[in-house]
Amino acid sequence: MKILVTGGLGFIGSNFIRRALTETKDEIVNLDAMTYAGNPENLADLIPHPRYRFLRGDITDPRAVRQAMEGVQAVAHFAAETHVDRSILDPAAFLKTNVLGTHVLLEEARRRAGEIKRFLHISTDEVYGPVLKGKSREDAPFRPTSPYAASKAAADHLAAAYHKTYGLPVVIARPSNNFGPYQYPEKAVPLMITNWIEGKPYPLYGDGRQVRNWIYVLDCVRAIGLLLRKGKPGDAYNVGGEVLVENRALVERTRDVMGVPRNLVRRVPDRPGHDRRYALDSGPLSRLGFRPDFPFDRTLRETVAWYKARPQWWRPLKTSSDFSSYYQKQYEARTKEIAAP
Ligand code: NAD
Ligand code: TYD
Image 1 (cartoon, rainbow, N blue to C red):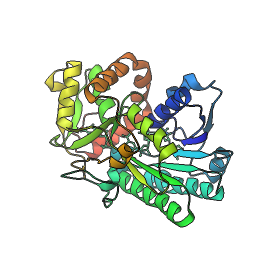
Image 2: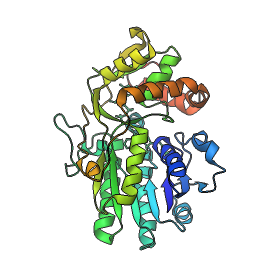
Image 3: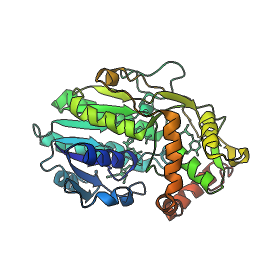
Image 4: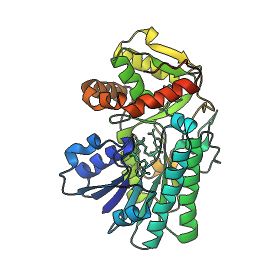
């Protein structure tokens, strides 16, 4: 199968492509705009692969999308602006890429009616908003809180509408928080690990009692591969990890793995609108035969080892002008208590 992957130079997309090229016979076209989060190093070793082609282009550009979708049978749409804190500082890019970009892709897929056998839209558990008790099922109402989550909710609805209205074979995946190799070091897990390798504090937002439903990225991309083949058009599938962990417990578990002192955790003012808890019921995915393979504690240790072994991968990202100007804005917006790492 020839698959158009959007955002394949990012964290989950690059893990998906790496797995597809090693464990399937699929041909991959990767359309990526190479934003700050799109890192060519993530797939540099696969450039000569005969079943891989990279196209630099923006999903909001209909011409780039038309060219990229030529001869394609399936779309795996990962491309997005993804960091909640950035969406709070500057939502415009989130609306453009996540909503308008998704629309451009859906339109091109509609134009190719019959050729595109699956349009897998990658949404997120954040569309449900906080769930204080129990777990969100796929039919739970959407109550997004951050501009990021609101833009992803709009895209999710739009993808579903293209199935209902035009019969496009859309399948929606809603993963929970991923962690693992190749995650940009502004996100909680790689920020924590790399700050501690550098001997710098990790800023823990608010009381640290927010709960996230962590999934190892290799489990997530295996689920996405399954949904591309077996997902029922018109259906949405939660892709949740096995564990629910409070942020302060995540800090403790990672501190234990790395053996760092307590003073390297700094309590800072909370993220505005910070969602208290996400938890997914992934019943429909498990009924397709999916079980997560990777235990949390082992993969957390392996993730720490991965970042320890690859300072050449993350140091240039953390010393980039983009990273420092983002932290400068965070620092200014959040009462100057978030020290620039
Ligand atoms: P990421 O930020 O690491 O990567 C995003 C990629 O999209 C980058 O390569 C970037 O260059 C590309 N991109 C951004 N704007 C683009 C545009 N206009 N045109 C083309 N390419 C563009 O993201 P990620 O963490 O890998 O997330 C991938 C998808 O999974 C996103 O849709 C995200 O909402 C969703 N998701 C992520 C998580 C998570 O924990 N990381 C959880 C649930 C859902
Ligand atoms: P993040 O990785 O940004 O993912 P999301 O906001 O999409 O869940 O953050 C995970 C959790 O960690 C979230 O509750 C916010 C919290 N967090 C901190 O406490 N400090 C930080 O520096 C970051 C980046 C996140």
